[in-house]
Length: 131
View 1 (tube, one colour):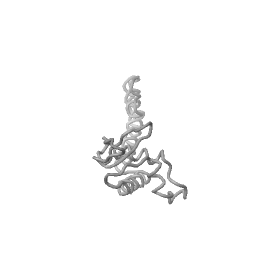
View 2 (spheres, rainbow, N blue to C red; view 1 turned 90 degrees about the vertical axis):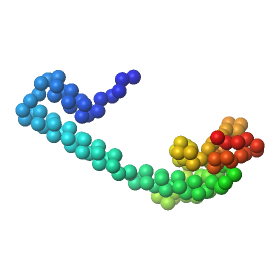
View 3 (cartoon, rainbow, N blue to C red; view 1 turned 90 degrees about the horizontal axis):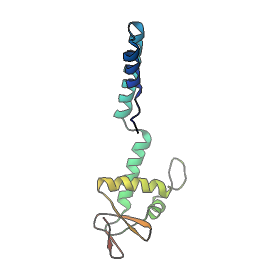
View 4 (cartoon, rainbow, N blue to C red; view 1 turned 60 degrees about the vertical axis):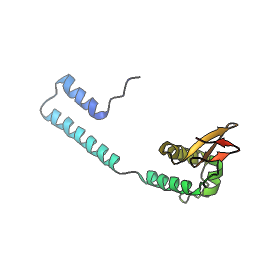
């Protein structure tokens, strides 16, 4: 599958293909600059949700005891309720955060009878080392 062109690439391709010049080119160049500036601002600062998820991931890491393995459902129950929605955290959200922690190496996982368990590196569950 071909890579989809960005808006800036599309604007530049239009300018080149149709030989646009003068005021029209200046307008399109200005639009491309505005898009680039907006994209730069977005990438510089994490969103409110990203900051909240980072804090939640740190809380999850604090809940995982050394040598103990947990399922995402277990950890979701331990987290309690989301202060924004006042609903319990879902196992799906917790699982996504645990996958990110696993990618950083802070948590390891293993599957036993179709259930995925998470723990600190070196943790064991029923004799099976996670990793």
